[in-house]
Image 1 (cartoon, rainbow, N blue to C red):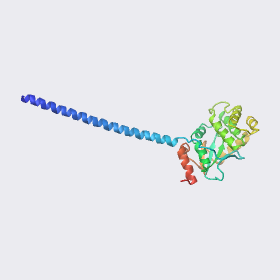
Image 2 (image 1 turned 180 degrees about the horizontal axis):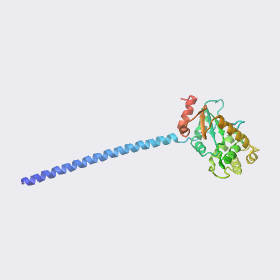
Image 3 (image 1 turned 90 degrees about the vertical axis):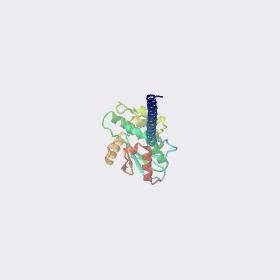
Image 4 (image 1 turned 45 degrees about the vertical axis):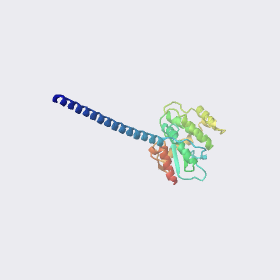
Length: 253
């Protein structure tokens, strides 16, 4: 073999080795990139899963704690002998965010009361001044006052939020609808229908709303207060965080 041929052969082998080396390094880089992406996706996915678990609503586990309608229009839900901590729930039946609260954290509140961990006090209010929203709220809230039985009251309360019309719907919460919804959930009070249709409790509800909003310095609904201290909105809408805050106040481990 001539010197020129040998030199060409050497150059070819060197070129082949370099190409093989280049491809090996390329494969290593690709493998590293894939590993990093998989790890990142796993972390992101894990974060979303964790967040989803934290915000996941509970299911009402079983029987409810006893519910008692108070003379002022507020309603207490608590097991016998449970007086603290106290969770005050200020809500307007026409408030869309209050509806969201009931859907997201309502089951947690009911479960904790049933577990004997908290005394819950519901305060139905009318916070709106504009029409037709104000009148819609007044019809629904005053209808709630027409239910003297606590268990039936809570069922009607939940139904009202479930069927809540839009804020600007003219004539939302029609009295005939309210009567039907009450009957659908088992309200049996003899004067319920006439009380709702004649809006007999409207004046009392308005007085209670005004006094409560002034006394409690409420800026809006929903507002949750635990032992008189307002709960941060970021806790209110995270069932696991709300449960922890209430259990901590109850001294639970």
